Length: 403
Image (cartoon, rainbow, N blue to C red; front, top):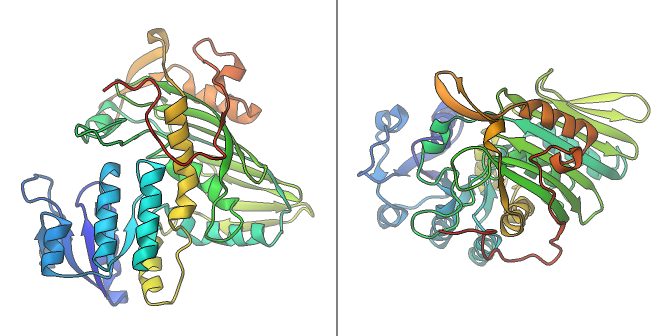
């Protein structure tokens, strides 16, 4: 089996390490990597030591070789073109999250996937891991009864260097006029927004679609998009979700979530023991394990699927609901700048960090009381109208966006 990978830095390095670490146990070969020779990022030693050919583009690769699987780990605005090129050249695709910048791009990728009879897996790694999939099977089997609500909070500080690491970081649109919509909810913490929707899907490879969204977006950093997100989502199957995430925090809080069902609840608190638990109404508890374990299982699920030994749990359609939230909020909700008097310039590991004074505690309280910042009465918080996304199929422009 022949694999090619796009990218050499950032998350692509994790893919490369996993491929060569596991290579002795799998019958596959990395036959190329795509990274323009004019760029200056260091090439991982695994590629050099194994004499893996470098190509400037996918087109150049396909002029010289072919692949069963293309692993795409590139900026969001490139996903559409690279996925379609791969599919039309006979390759299956593992595309990193989010699937695309806009919902219409995702649907076009899905259309070509069906046309070519090649799969596109979306790299939300929790959707491939055994703890999440085992829990989802139990939910589908009715172990916990009907879902009522779910909530998640993530507090991950990100320094100014994080936003300066790439030309598209924190951007709404790139320098060439392509939508990017890079934000706290569409990049680092996108997994956890997607996870709530994914676990509530009505089949193992489905996610629940949003019906209404009430969201607030805020910004402390000097970026185009927002670094703090607070939103309530009502799904089409009648479940109320709360998602809270921020990079403008002083201290790190790894994801905490809770699902409430008619016959029990599900909890995960990475700050405690990192184990996903199901609590049944009879008082018994089921431990599912740590969803952060084996984050590269998605690669090997794709390989097994090509061999007809497995199936893709997170195809494009399962990733679209998260993207729908991002698109609708970007289109309808203005970004509120935090007042200067609440923004603090600090330091973390020798790097400059801008954060909102007390934001960790604010999000903790919002999570506990299941409210948005405006509902808690914080002076800088601005309430926003509820968006109905039942028939939302196309992103057109970001709210108040000016290039």
